[in-house]
Length: 83
Image (cartoon, rainbow, N blue to C red):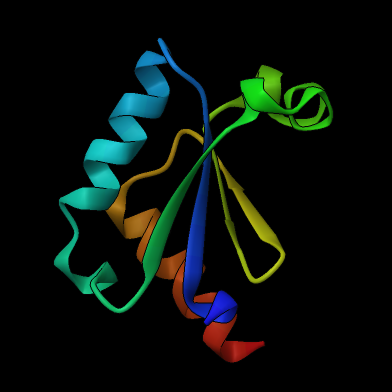
């Protein structure tokens, strides 16, 4: 189901993207979500939109820019439940 998909806008050779992915995979509370890693280098429009601020998380149309902690991520996702 698309609404349970957390997208990580990323690209190869991006240390910050690797850090974000490590954080996401270390959080068992995200187990109910599908993590989709999107390589923005594959799409010029995505590269233009996200290239300067990678990594970016997207969930239900909302964006969370790096840097973020596990606590930031939990609060951000909890904010979605309040919407």
